Amino acid sequence: MKQPGYDDNPPVDYEVRDPEGEGKRKITVTRRIDRLLYMLEHGRIAEHQFEAGRRLQADFERMTVGGYAVCIGVAGSPSPGSNLADAKCDAMDRYMAAITSAPPVTRHVIQSLICEDIDKSLDQYAIRAGSDRRQIMGLLIAGLDALAVHYGLATTGSQ
Image (cartoon, rainbow, N blue to C red; front, side):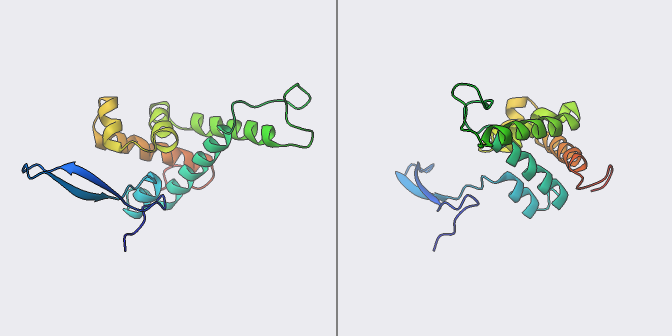
């Protein structure tokens, strides 16, 4: 039986052109879209870096719920007692505090690879950034370390 990928979806069969010119053949692709879990399982990041990345992802997801945050008492606002807008605003504050705690050179890498472009590979990001994969991984690790310190999961210089 085929094993699911990290996104719990089954592997996908694709028809691709056979390089030897013998027509088409099928290949099976299992996407590992959970970059943080993949890096943790392969020893590229530590547990505190993983947890810091997860917290940032959670706040990013909460702050992107809906089109915009609204204030109670304004036309079109949620009904009294609804705390969606508060939760979203709190997530925005936590996200911005976390991102600004990271060194400026790491911020775009963290935002892109951990929150926004989770379907892009590290190599694709490096090419787009005009950089080396190892340099991008170093920036990502440094950023995750800074986030871990921000969240109280590690102290400065621990890894």
